[in-house]
Image (tube, rainbow, N blue to C red; front, side):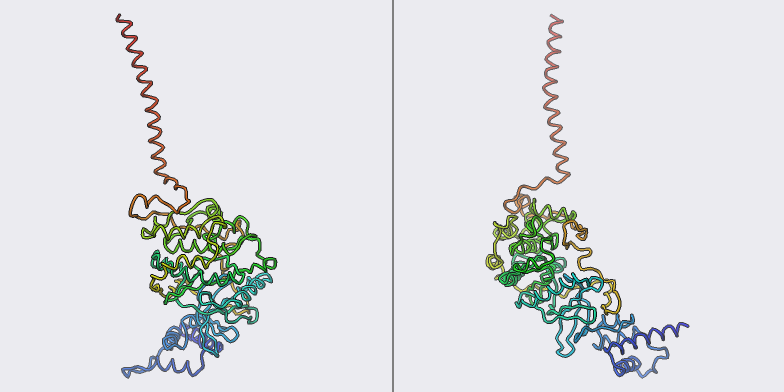
Length: 464
């Protein structure tokens, strides 16, 4: 019985492989022969070759990728979109899932962003089309380029260049805060890319570390233009007037009046990204989405030197100018950001970026368009949202701990134009107790002296 079950599984894998077009009968036969061939001359194994052994052999030989093998073992047969063959799952993008693929004829690797099937409403397709047309108008080294777009049945997709490496968020999470030189190198390149977009009337609206890709050679590229919009097309943008972006990096004006945002909103978000790069902390960790929004409007973050003692005051001043709450007082262009940070970037060697670490979770199936796939929305479980009242923004679990610093002055100073921070709770309690004791003593001592004087007067009167 067990043998029949094993044979059934094997036939599913082989049949799926042939139907998918990824493998021929000859390739399967060669893999089986290679497994059966014993170097020591021993006879071929009596037991049938399992799915796992056959798949592993095909992966080892480079005939299949691990993702393709897993999908075929599950009985899935469609691993293509038009002329593109899907080779791997990359993750989530601004509008949907992102897969790695290769053009069947050209052999060029690329990334394909797929609009989730259960989100393919007319409005979602319209937004996706806007993203495609937005990226099609941009061609810059520091922006992720668009190559192609289309739909395969019910599946709509956007093809962009594949950027090896990782994003700034993962880079900091894995390696810790960057040096001023490393951070400047990444942000200068990002600013140059944004300036190119701003000059063409585009506002990104979701600049954050997760949308800044860094290659192993230290090249930075701004990605995910899913929320972007052109200034002159604001009336046609279905998200115009809504709060769109990611809670940890929203500019105050995006929160207070999203109809008035300009390119300087991207500069504030880029400043928040720079803050994260050199401190390893978001500007306002903890709290709900509404808490974060309120703090962006009313409070200022800790001085970055609290978390990275090497940050100079000159560098912090540039950061403060990027994160100025009043848009009129903020650095006005991304080109100026790049110019002011350039002295530090020139001293920087390329960041030793590594490949993005694979998730421990099973990759999702590729949507075929034949049935509804339960694909997770891009913004689920993140701090991205389109409405400040939306529950999609999750609370950050990062605690705002303090790092050791060089001096007491460094420990207590924050970014200029910032009010002194409130005392930690335990210090406030200690201060309250001490104050109360002093007040009690101040009252008790005079009363005691008056009582003593009165008793002395009475005793003298009685004895006299």
